[in-house]
Image (cartoon, rainbow, N blue to C red; front, side, top):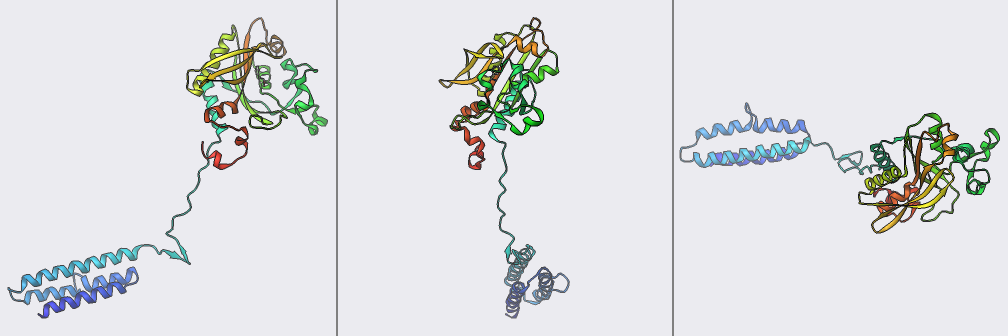
Length: 332
Ligand code: PHE
């Protein structure tokens, strides 16, 4: 049957032309030639259908529809393929995925500090700051640490030779208690602050010692502040940070700027964890900043930040925090 052969020839021609079309414009021309509604070759074939006998018509009609839908599909597939951007430009496969960007993270110590501020903020303590390069008045004298005290030994501190000539003795602060003085010098009581920052001591560096570490200093001065307030604040703080039912223990101690003075430990996961030092602000300190110790009392504490962070995350060596090894830092 001539009509059937024509259909076969049409399909073969169309398939060849579709494969040969190499860009979007070419495939459009092929589409118009083979499938165009007005003058396409399909129209001529359709005219043939009208001429065949009623007997042959169903067979031919089915064949016509099959061929038509196959050519339409092939044409559409080719159009889709040709409309994709080129894979390769100047020899580079532009469809390859890029190298994933590795997002930075907040350093675990900074995360800890932020959380400390947040917790203490909820207890009504605002954040205060002081300089890391200090004079002897703020680091020692105002804190009731006399000239002959061993803590003032130059071998126990980082004195700055360069600053001395121009400004008198200067050192990297050995404790954040300096900020107690700076805050009280500037405002009258009541005071309720924390100050979190770096301190420097020429310790031999090992798994638990670094010549630079962080402390959180707390200071609360008001009428009728007692050691019960100190204990409550420290227990609330410890509970908020470690999320457990922690016990706070005071052991008698000595600091020149607090009286009485205590070492503070915290019971957590069946161990005593040393938090730092604390006590009631010594009347001499209050007097040095112009406060009246008969009017107000206060407590102060100084806690090691690294220690908390190490305990919470199971970090066994303080040096990890300062080495900037991303394999370590990426875990937080
Ligand atoms: N400044 C003390 C230290 O660094 C800690 C401390 C702070 C003790 C406040 C008492 C009151 O060891």
